[in-house]
Image (cartoon, rainbow, N blue to C red; front, side, top):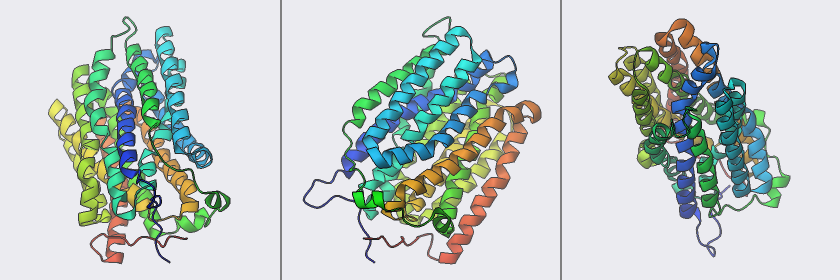
Length: 412
């Protein structure tokens, strides 16, 4: 069967470029808030928790609620459309910011955990920006559309930690309350940008069809490697990144040092997005995933080499670039595993599995660091990354095509 293009008809203007710009800007604001949370959440949890080993629990709850909300968010957007769903997600983020400000004001660790959990539901919606960009793009532009939307995170990498430093004492004496107030304002600004995206709601015939069973889709080697790449790339990133600010504090470094390292980590995550799509087209998606896995292994090696700011900085930059290649590579590969009628449930399953492992990494990070130390956190990275590397290498040899994967046949 001939492949169906996801573009609108030739008689209508192609909205894919405009969508990429609006979604990239929206992601920049969303990720600026997420980058602020990366920088301050564990420290705020450490400040509020009586048992300091629970310091990363609010961030872990956030990841757990991303996982729990991925399926409802995807199914809701299948019914009401991307734009309406994304705006609802920003409303949840605004509510989460208000709750976190109030919790810090009252010194309530439980309240802070509730607000952090709501940020997870908020995040579940904007995680679909990358797939939304691909939905009006043709096959030739699809990997670049995903990659360019993710490049919006470069703004977040620069602005997020700087906003965290600026807002840390904005509502003094309530340290970090100002950071969460700023995040709420970013949610409001994002709603204005989302008004300009143009993604048609799913056709009625696709709403009536369910496509193949998930069990059949999940047996595809492409699906397995796509999910493993995104899941392990994101999971190990969460494990190491969540522990980093506390590990730096325990090593005698200042908050500004942690903010600097997280800022460069976020740059490593998103700056490659300007060319990741091009690299995927040039060298093949599997080769890019393999390089990402090797960068994650290199991260563990650098982190194990010492406790100076330079080691934390180098390890976290490598971790960021490794995440970028594995996550964008996995997302690109996933778009070749489903028909239009199967889109919502396959994307939901993918993100549920991805953020399931992210949740495990986030929950275990603080406890592992507290009980076993920074070295154990980094040794824990090695085995899962090797699993993703081996699966991808196997698929590459099976196809023997330099990493290029033929798309599935699209149904009419």
